[in-house]
Image 1 (cartoon, helix red, strand yellow):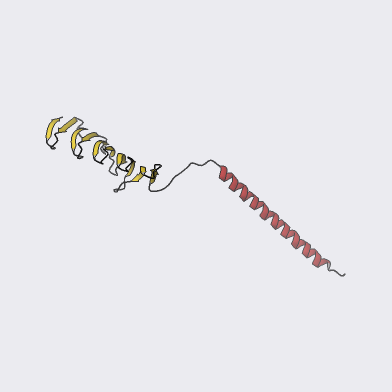
Image 2: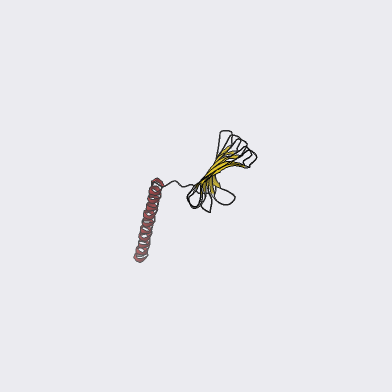
Length: 159
């Protein structure tokens, strides 16, 4: 058997290059897997991103809603078992913040609100949702109390 020493030497050199290349690839692959493993167990803040979150009860009824109102302002709504809003918290784009309570039929019965300038307002309403009593602070800083009768006519006012 006649073999060419240059040919064997070049073949051995090529094989050694291939082995070095495979070692490098194996090392980078191992480092990549190690990095993926570290990132998998690295503590991260849990983030939920979306436009709304709805929590349902065991019967599948919407009981809690976190989302946006029609005007784009954020709101938290708590529903009764019939899926009617009973309590709602929202912040309007103009700066108003409000907490509203409704009866089982959906009529707004009580609302606590802060005006954009920070003035508080409390409104109590009748079964039809019309305001019957309100307590607020005027822009001048005075207290304002207004009471209406069942027909909606003003019964008393104090500043």
